Amino acid sequence: MKSVSFSNNAELYEYIKDKKNDVEIVACIITNLLGTYFKCFFYVKEITLNKLESGFSFDASSIKLCSDTEVSDFFIKVDHSTCYLEECDGKNILNIMCDIKRYNGFDYYKCPRTILKKTCEFVKNEGIADKVCIGNELEFFIFDKVNYSLDEYNTYLKVYDRESFSCKNDLSSIYGNHVVNKVEPHKDHFNNPNNEYLINDDSKKVKKKSGYFTTDPYDTSNIIKLRICRALNDMNINVQRYHHEVSTSQHEISLKYFDALTNADFLLITKQIIKTTVSSFNRTATFMPKPLVNDNGNGLHCNISLWKNNKNIFYHNDPSTFFLSKESFYFMYGIVKHAKALQAFCNATMNSYKRLVPGFETCQKLFYSFGSRSAVIRLSLINYSNPSEKRIEFRLPDCANSPHLVMAAIILAGYDGIKSKEQPLVPFESKDNHFYISSIFSKYVQHPENFNILTHALEGYESLHTINESPEFKNFFKCEEPQGISFSLVESLDALEKDHAFLTVNNIFTEEMIQEYIKFKREEIDAYNKYVNAYDYHLYYEC
Image (tube, rainbow, N blue to C red; front, top):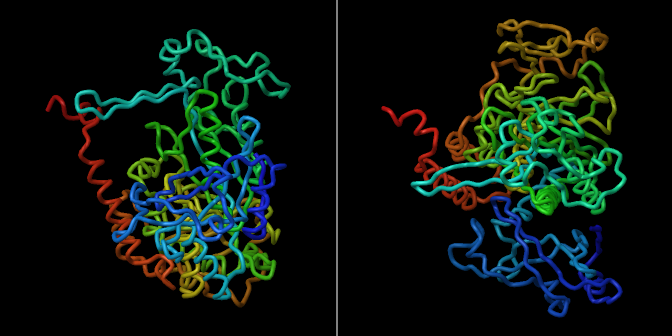
């Protein structure tokens, strides 16, 4: 795969028609409000410059949360700056990210890319930031096989996982006594020289919650991750690192930051590349937030910074505030203030809330912190005085959603915080369910004596705690007990219904779109709750 970009549709058309480029098919990629990846393929002979300019017609009625109540005829409009080549049988497929337009060429209020474009343009026109940069950490599982049934007399789930002690007998029934990965032997130093992994060898299993940073022979997907990351890097989706995660057969890929729209496009494409690459090894990948009970789930951590005039506005050249600017705290407080409503997009499934439970390194409280894993926002201690590295890490989202809607909603929540300049919460540290203010910030808290907390130094950074306070931050923070996150999709949708004015600013998210989304998700909850599963039998069969 290779990334290619064009300055206009005329250049794109010339490239497609040039026989030297061996483009056989143009693949148009669109997405809906659920973040589903869709493709429509067009042979080159059908491509005209007029169609690139005006769009390709399609019937949106078969795509969930895509069609209008009045009409179903829409257009796919290519974005010439977002192309990548994919080789197939010696010919090239040119993939292009596209927007959904109305039949008259106007913007469509349910196109996620359009919503995010309008968000970024609005923040820029308001003078807040020229660019919002976001980098992500994607977590996912790779299993050998998954079977499930929802039949009323045969409801079951069976997960086959070669790294687990629990599954070796099941896998032997599928593969025999060993598994041979279908790859050509090559010289990667960490690849098993025989491309072989013995199913019945307990010494090569991953113990529960012991998988973090493990490698061969325990990480059975190293070669798969390498193939994935090579493909991503070839497309200029720059991978910073990849590794095995805590859970058995769980993995993480960290992507370099890009502007918000490019980031969301890349997330959509990255998920698809991971799924197709894993499938080529006769295995299966999932991003569902909680695929296994009593084990860690999959998150999507978002590292965010705002830039104006080529300067990171989250950075403030003052060690007494840990080099964090007022804008960064306003932005974070905007996210915290609207977090429960944000969860309707960031944690958009019933399964999402099975991840957000205590004991699995997940967010629990609405605050920001340097060290606490229960905070929704983490402040990095790495290169904390480097202007280009100053960022916040929003840890609440997972991957079971629309990346474009998630990024747009986060930005608008942060924008609301900056615009309102409401007194933000002080950063907390937490231990044993008690909250502490680090002494580096305690001098900026208004009436800290009214809150029953302890003050302590941030360990390892004691020298910063003795620096004279900055007058402009006097009484800047308020100190309140952090609230809990939403722990169900019902609670998140209720919050969105009450709190969405920050999204409808400048008509970016329309009232109609939000109400349609809420209605769809409530119907999904009703369908989910009707099903009877094995745990019902475990609890109640003998009542």
